Length: 141
Image 1 (cartoon, one colour):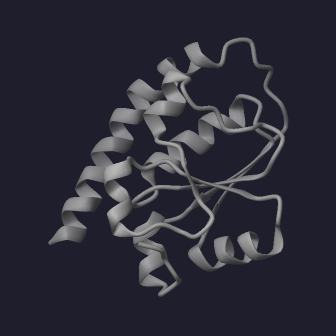
Image 2: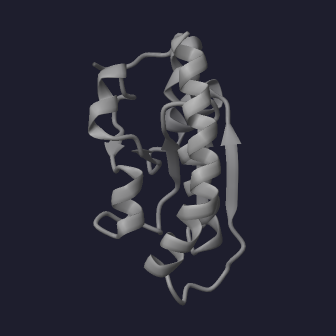
């Protein structure tokens, strides 16, 4: 039941983000030229391999502080989506970034936006923390 609720919320957020996120973020990132960039959605195992092989990879968890009780990936940095959109936090553009959220919707929307606005290498964890757990990969609590 929790999974159905989480997926419903995720789908609703994705639709909402599609209509609200892009205009709000474009105000925060004006004048950035579009560049050739890499944006890719990766499975939990691919993400684990990236984290292990790419020491320069920045792992950004875009969930809210209250969601961390579900677990988080070791080495991740909490940078809530709305803090990024509002401009109070800004991921560096000169490092590869792996975005993580609860089920993959928020990180997907943000990753697409970032890749169109100057971030050259952005990855999205497919299925978010939920899929990471299902793959039985380690989490911190």
